[in-house]
Each structure stands twice: as C-alpha cells, then as structure tokens.
Length: 325
Image (cartoon, rainbow, N blue to C red; front, top):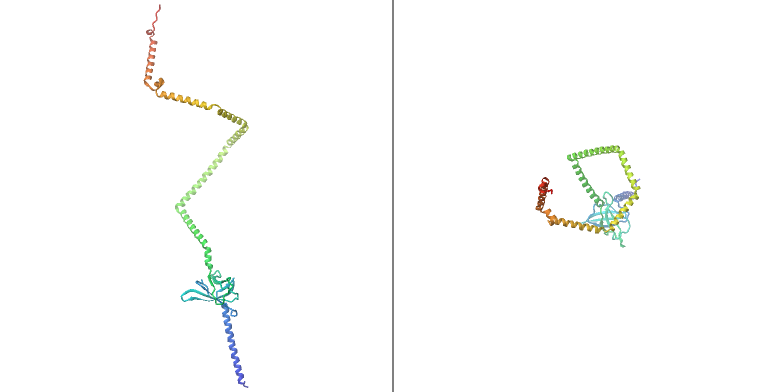
C-alpha cells in the first residue's frame, strides 16, 4: 500500500527539520562551551569599558577584572590606539550589574607571585555612572617584583657591605697565615708557653718561700698587731703630746719671736759688713789678711826674737852682768 503524496512530503519536511534543529542546538552548545571556556557568560548582560595605558606590563586577553577583590569581568581585547601612537587600548567586559562611577580608576596589578596581571577597578565617588563603552581612568601600580625589589634594596646594600667586609677579612686572614706570619705566630705561641712556664715556676717558688718564711711572717704580723694595740692603748698619751706641741706653737706665736729674728738678722748683717771690710783691706786685720808684706815683717820679727831668746839662753853673761859689792 502506497502512502499519499502529501504524507510523504510531510514526513520529508519533518526529517529535515529535525536535522536542522539538531545542527542549531549543536552550534549553540558549541558557542556556549567556547564562551564558557573563555570565561564569558552568554546569558548575562555585558557592559564594555575601555582604559588606555602607556604600558600594560604583560597584561593579556582573558585576564580577570576585579572590584574590591571580587571578579566581575575580564579583558576582552587589547590593541594600539593608532598607527602613530604606542598607547594600548584595553577593552574590558563587565558582567556584574554593579554601577561604576565615571571617575573610577582601572589599575593594573600583580595577581599572584608569578607575576600574572589583572585589573582592579577602584570605584570613584562620582554620582554620575559610566555607561557601556565609556573610558575609565587608567593606572598602573607598582608590580610585585618592583615592590619586592624596593623592599629588598636596603637588605641588598647591607649584603654588599657584608660581602665586602668578609672579603676584607679573608684577605687579612690570608695575609695572617702566610709563611712569614705563620712562623711569627709559632714563635709567639712558644714565647707565651715559656712565659706561662716561668710564671708557674715563680708561683711554686713563692709558695715555697711563703712556707719557709711562715713563722717570720706570723711574727711580723704579731709585732704589727702589738704596735697597733700599743698605739691604741697610748692614745691618751699621744693626745697629750700633741696638745703640748700645740701649746708650744701658740707660745712661739705669741712671743716676740719676730723681733728676735730681726735682731739676729741685724747681727748677721754687721758680721757680713766686717768680713767685707776685712776683705777690702780696711784696718789692721784687713791689712794683715790682704797685705803679704806685713805678714812677712811679722814673721821676720818673730824669727829674730826667737834667735835673740836662744842667744840669751846660751850666753846669759853677754847680756846680764852681775857685780858683788
């Protein structure tokens, strides 16, 4: 039994429709999957914002966009502003419905320690909100590498100084332990050892001496103790002696000691004048002291007198004549 022609046509259309529908669904799923893999949500209402940078520092397509740490979109595209300009235009897709003030700043920063880039939109305080397609203020913060380098710069300087100090110390050690200095060090060590040996012998000698002189030292200490005890026992007598000295000093101070000293000085001056006059040849004594001729005459007279007395003694009759009646 053959089907009617219109039924065959309906069946043919239904089969083609099914094939077309399946193809459309497959294409839709493929587009959705491809968009999903790129991080795009085909069912969300997207807004497009633009930021222009002098240097994007390694930012790439599909890098995330954050607001207050929450991912709200991604980078859709990047290109140079014109053929004669090196500025880079970054196109951002925002899928979050949060309103963005028109003075907000799109700042490129390091998202992790590996240096992956992302954009953080710092919301402004304007009451006017940016529309899709508007341009936000562009900013590029200090990268994590630059920040770490800045923080480590003082440490690097200290490490360089430390390395220089270590190098200087090693040079000094090499110089210290060369052959000549090593010999000197050995001699110094030997000298120190001999010094300690001498010190040990001296200590032993002192110990022996102290043991041998122990009784004498004890006697000296006992005598010292006895003297100290006698001084303590005769303290009153010493005080009395000191009082007598004090009284004598007061008596001398109150007496006419000054006039006595002046008189003695005057007498000494007179004696000095007499001696001076004698030295200058004044008076008989001065002539006797200073004139040799007078001394010679006196000596001659004394010699003649001695001869006369000797002659009288030997020849008394020559000088003494006696007559009896």
